Amino acid sequence: MPFKNTILSSLLKNRHIQIENFKDRPLEVQNKVFKNLIKMGEYTVFGVDHKFSEIADVKKFQELIPIRKYEEFLEYINKTRKGHKDILWPGYVKWFAKSSGTTDNKSKYIPITNESLKKCHYKAGKDMLSLYAINFPETNLYNGKGLMLGGSQIQNKNHGYFEGDLSAILISNFPFWVNMHRVPDLQTALMSDWEKKVNIICNQAINENITNITGVPSWTLVVLKKVLEITKSSSLLEVWPNLELYMHGGVHFSPYVKQFYKMIPSNDMNYVEGYNASEGFFGIQDTKNSKDLLLMLDYGIFYEFILLKDYKDGIRETVLLSEVIINEVYVMIISTNAGLWRYVIGDTIRFTSLSPFRIRVVGRTKNYINAFGEELMVENVERALYLSCQKYHCTVQNFIVAPKFIGDGRGVHQWIVEFQDIPKDLNIFSEYLDRKIRELNSDYDAKRTDNFILDCLQIFPAKKNIFYKWLKINNRLGGQYKVPRLDNDGIKFNEIKSLM
Image: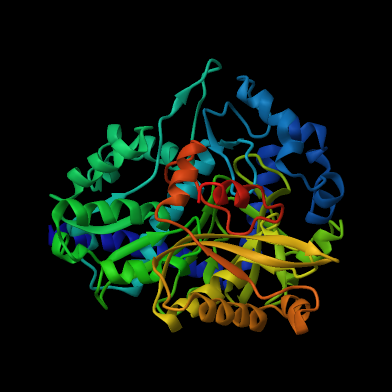
């Protein structure tokens, strides 16, 4: 087993040379990606419609192809789903990732081509392990198995394609060597009954030598708490003494940190974040001492960016990597080897480094509160909540925030918070949380000054599992589903509040 660990670590480290190459020559690598995408797309229906044959450079590409949201791709995606080939990308598309999104109830069907599967999503998985092996050369990760959480039943449609959430598609196509090193088995991983699946996963995993875990934090916690319950253990290290790594993504990790530390009380436990979506894999935490994400430039994705303030004003002028500015908030525009062209993914990011290009995810273009001009982003509330929980020794399981109008153009932000450990004095906690948000967001602070527009935020403590109940009622149990943190129109907030 130690020999296997050495061989796998060595193979993964070889990829590190290529990563260093795009870190050293990012613009050259991105230009190569761009040219390859245009070449591949030239004879597709989309490529013919948009005169790809005339595209010699990025400027011409931007002139001929408008920026699009998902709804504006539907004509092409629907043709692809009906079994037509060469629509957005050469050949047939066999897989579609069904994505419900965080802020929209309508399902999206994102094409997953062979190229995007192998050269983006799987390549990213290998890279997370490669970078980990570089940062932690003494790792024994491969002497055990990985607990991989996610997936649901894949549906076989009439036109010969399959649809399901991204994690299910990835699991269904794993090479044999990955399946040898993971839990649960394929049949269990693809079960659609989430509650039944959790029990089976736990019973399979508790008897294995689990060295690493992968999954969305909110759903991973559900499984890990069940493991502790079944084994009557106080710590996961009692169950899996060789556990050393948790790889996570999908939501910000800060609201969940304290719960993981409590269940895995070890300074030797490592946490690595990846930034991915159905549309592609974009960033990986590549250093030990920073939460910044290295923007991955050789996954068949060409990047453009629009300043968030411009995007909100209807301006669609993009900048390339050579033009971005540190700490500005950008909307990310992608062209990919899945046949998405100048696609608005809906995420907002900011650059923390330009050499190499590192980013942090700020939020969503739709997932913010601006009812009173406060421009409140997810990054603000999650950071403020984390700091408040640290100070008052409490733990949050889940939360949602929405604005409420109280007359004369004034209002208040209301929070529903499911505490695992509730603060002793909720009023003091609320005031401190409000103060921290003011420190992090100058627009919010301006509206809060002298209670001019906004009153101090209000917290409604929720009973246990209320968010889980809401997800279950809405048929949203499972690894891909998330509770929206900020609900500008208050619809989901009121649905959850009605369950209290």
